[in-house]
Image (cartoon, rainbow, N blue to C red; front, side):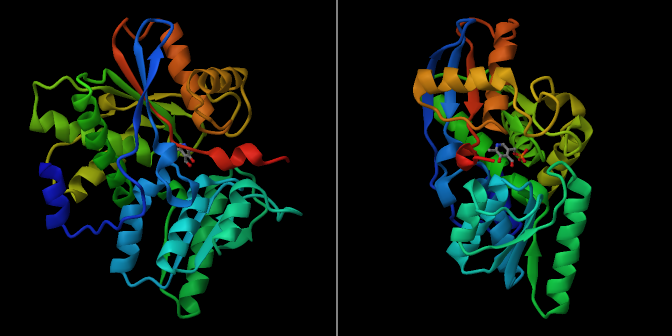
Length: 335
Ligand SMILES: Cc1ncc(COP(=O)(O)O)c(C=O)c1O
């Protein structure tokens, strides 16, 4: 609560794009006897939902404050972040440019089909999906071009993982703990998929504020399951981003690397390369609660939760929250 007041004091503008709060559903027992809870951030609503809606509420607030005339962002060919930015652009009547990996496909599918439906202009770069440095260079080049054409682009880095974007998940941390309080339990761990690190950094910032506000409160371990090499698979970088977020919120408390847990053991060989554990986690989640996971992000994240549980990390009757971060459209991609 204290933090929200500070958001207002610092004139960080939040616009409404998501349908919040998202539900926190009971997922029954894990193998260990721990209780599973599923935080349905796949149901945030914006352009069929996902975690990026929370970041975009603040990123687009920043765009409107800067009188932006268009949005620019970047991602893999099937980027959920790009699709949701396109949806935000449609809602705000801001032309949206998406810099994407890969060549122009014969038919648009999945997230690209939806992004195009929302009116975004797709810029196919031909770069590999994990060539993040060249993709970011292409975003910068396009941004410069738009400026020289007289536009005022609001250019958003990969995944929307800036301190402003990460505020979305600092606020989500409070939303989750308030829902746990209402259901009369304290979460022992919050597990989710991490890639560009903004979701993770925001949750850590939320944790640090909660710890400062009430040092006696039982607070969860924040566990990110990494799915992409060379984006933000570094506890140092996530702690830095959490601290930049805390500074933006006007907080004086800071995170350390010890507050950041990134588990890269469930990624497989690289970003978007399927794993057997993710396929099994997908079936488990679909059979247990009709939760629909995607192979690139949420299934690998959930395979991390199941894998850590199988190794005995979670005590019987402890409470483990999985944030379902979305990713549905890539399920419908055929190539
Ligand atoms: C479905 C899904 N889950 C998780 C993530 C990871 O979020 P972050 O980039 O904030 O680490 C993404 C990022 O694109 C995503 O699309």
